[in-house]
Length: 331
Image (tube, rainbow, N blue to C red; front, side):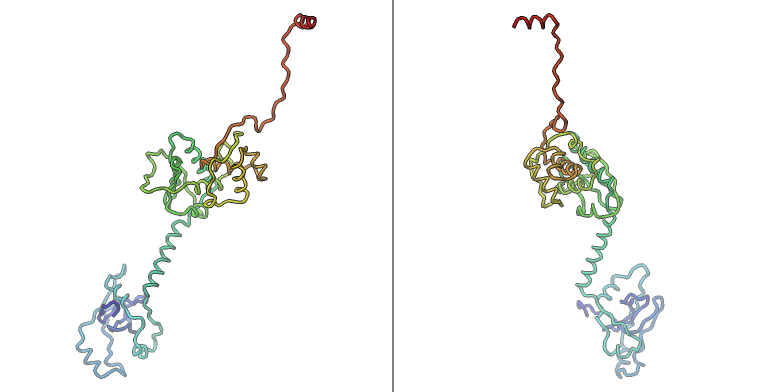
């Protein structure tokens, strides 16, 4: 027998999954079946034509057969082991004797069992996170919450909570985040989450190191709308890179790469950057706002950079008539 286990002849639950019992003759499965709730007798192999003369003597000395009645809830461990230890196909003699048996019983291999288990686990894992997606309103809330956390002296945690998935925790002070899944699921699924800013002592305690938050902030910044951008980008300040971003980990466009190079070379306002890169002002604000949250920019405030200079007007003279006459005749 398989794995050295000898299974005695008897009635067992049909390994094909049918709602009946099937006869196991200690060597292979046969075509004989019986109802689950019945007390079937062993098939009378001695009266079948074509059997060997000594079959009756052998059957007379065989011990009482085993009848397995599985419960409706689940099969016993012994039944499961018997089903797993069954041969691949029935014997040629039984196949020739049965006229109505057309199904061949196949035993699953270890490889097929592992493949099926892996497929089931993968399907469960995908279905668990297949309903995660964010609306534009949630992207905006995330962007504003991170902006407030970066500028707050208490550095609170930002949490994105889902009803059927792990909570995304963002630590602006440590520039890290914790989530059980890939960031790809955050932008390609179809349900929403709730954004909440919590005090650091009340946040979810993490026992493991977090992930670098730059890809997350970049993802949020590229999905958020202009009303949630960093207000500093509207202040007329001039920005310049003080550290290059790792664009290999960020999904970027050619225009974004060009604007990044310009910010690395000179101090520019949002309008100047948009004009040089020939992009919309909101796209330039998006890049600057996202880089500012990442801590990649330095800036200087130029209060007249984006305003027209007022012409100088001569001040009105405060001298009287006698002073002017005196000054005139004293020349």
